[in-house]
Length: 346
Image (cartoon, rainbow, N blue to C red; front, side, top):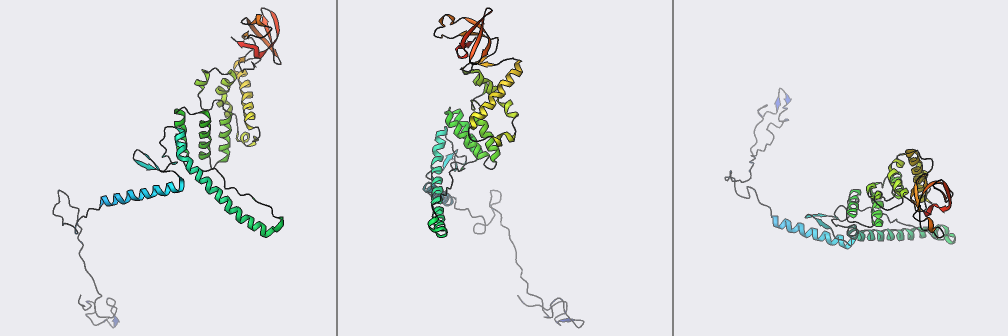
């Protein structure tokens, strides 16, 4: 590009005895560069006049990219299996890590099989951590305290969350539908509560206690009412939600860990007895040893008791109870000497 004289000072470098503000006293114009920009569109059926490559669109090597992605995923699977002892699982063509919603098994046992190697490996890491830290702690202890130092113990813990609470809940639902055992359902319930309330220890303690206190936790009231179980347990199931509504945070925080289960079940039983009496205006509420609900005035029969065979099958009216013994009414005459466990409500 050729140099051109400054149009302001005509190359004289000054304007009215002052340095030219345009060319800064050089007398020529600054260097300038010019270029043209051409935007090339993609070739389409309606626009076939677009220049061919390399001026136009160049199709990428899709097959090569797909091969590279598959190869990388294969390497990722190898790394995962080497580290965790388990491969990723596929769900509807989508690859998802096991333990993060990727478990597509139909049973809780199969889901546990998918995640168990990861738990085992995490436990190994925890043990390695404890051994390494113990080595350093023992070294410092022996250096500082010499012969007075004895030993130390460092545990890395064994509670690990490798899936979301929603994923655990899905596994719990599948386990219920798959008729899993009560122990498996309880284990999954505790796992779900730990994942959901991992940052809220008070709520975790609350719902863990309620899970322990509620009778037939994984069954509905309608199902329990059809079972041949003691009436007191049916009442506890019916009134459970009403009982929990009366509890405060102070109740859950002040409960001692020792003897926790019998304590909360006793509290539930006491509430049920009081509530049932209030709802039915009953003066007395009695239960036989089998837990069958008996009210004063109920018609009962006597089981086959040794020495009282002549009373078996005969109908009596329950009058009252003294200790474990019942007082029956037989057409105006009192019958004593029978225990409540020997009675059957009609």
